Image (cartoon, rainbow, N blue to C red; front, side, top):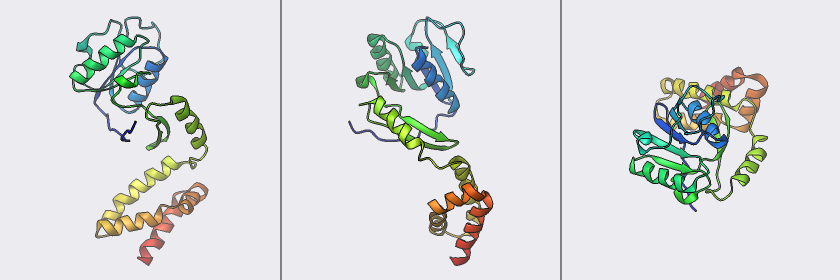
Length: 206
């Protein structure tokens, strides 16, 4: 199955999770971290849940629960219910992921490695979540230390270059030179000053 990879901004968008089991709870946490407006629905809602502050409805699923949703996760053991929710979600204009039912999925949630805004996503087109998990474990060790902080610094530098270089092409060329394994290693050892020194060298030579 061919899938199209995408990083989706869901800040402020409504996301609905049907099913408060372990899978559903993990979805709630990740959606909340992405600043979605999350609703969790389950008629057998546990009395105590270690979850971020989201809307929790201890009631049977109804199509009305999906009103205004941009994204729906169905995480129950009832395949018939999962399929019905998937149908209702599409009718409501939402994209849907049904756990372990590829035929009822519009997208697959990849395994991820993240450090601040740096996210590495691993997907297998729904074929094998276990393989995604293994690749995550392998690749996690390859993630450079503090790469999220390095990305934050690059964001600041991109903004600064708009006032220091005239064209998009010039700014792109400077950033391409700056972002290298050598610069990342210097950042890890010496911090921000090493990166800024490298940037000034690039600009002087341009």
